[in-house]
Length: 434
Ligand code: GLY
Ligand code: MN
Ligand code: MN
Image 1 (cartoon, rainbow, N blue to C red):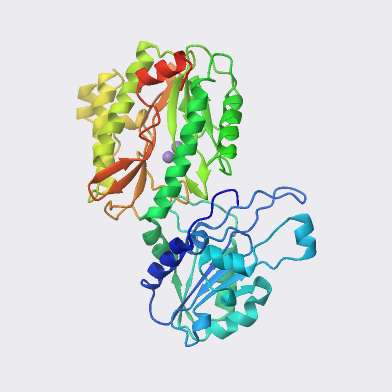
Image 2 (cartoon, rainbow, N blue to C red):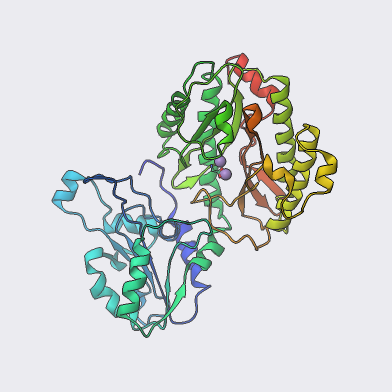
């Protein structure tokens, strides 16, 4: 892996915390993700299943973890299955984990690590010592994939094969655990933010009229990868002028024009953890007065929203309060009228015409990370804070986005050192130094 080794203590503790949430005589099965095909014999890059990574740190395909904490034989309480290598695999794909390396990564003793091809023979010794089987599935509320995952296939096969076991959902337990970041996870997210900052600072010297959006993408990728990132945390949005009003603009194929603002929703991943940054730059190095007014309005909303990202608050209430702040900024910008806002249907507030997405989402091993929106904010949660104003008739879209860690005593902005004040951005761009 290009990232630095992560202490196995993190994964050992993650498994221990999961065990405390299980019913007696349980068994848990986790799978790595499939390698997704493209065309012909082509494949996408491998992306580990976030839950499996969270519990093992193993970043390799065809891996399985089986936990059976009440098994009478200690060696079956925690078992890892690895893809066995061969001379052919070594020649074509390179090195695969040995059992000793997997022990070092995960903290699972090598004698409890088997090859994936041995799964059936080992598993048969475990499954009948358990009553309840926890199987995983993608329960993200925004998941709309029609592709059947390895986990889904397994649920079907398991039902056929062991119809008398009691099946339970693992996902709510994983969401519960992953919502609270451990100190080591926060450090990895800080590193993703640090690499993101390095990429962003590079742009301050690079953006100028005539630069293509894809050239900016290339600059960022160069910086991210040279700093041990796999690359972008998500498909980058590099949207100049009116493109910024297309929320999921990813074509990145237009020239940046003098007088336009460019919206950059771009961030690095590191060790499977993600940053999620948005900044807006004036292509010329200077905002027009109108652009600056809109920019500063978004920044004020962000600063108010950040104050509400504190322990004890509730997701829905937070979003309603941010909406009120946005409403008054939009009135100030002349985009909404006070009397119309006073008469609006509360179920369809007028501000949504200019700010049509949520203010925050959980962030972590997934960019839109898992977590329950009905759970009060708690120390250890990491959220984005990303208000925006999109004015299609003016060809202007401004969004600002930072990553916020909730603590016992307020919160910490993990992106506090990434320039955000309009004046500072102008200064850095026009002095051509960062
Ligand atoms: N970059 C994706 C998002 O901001 O949610
Ligand atoms: Mn973003
Ligand atoms: Mn985001």
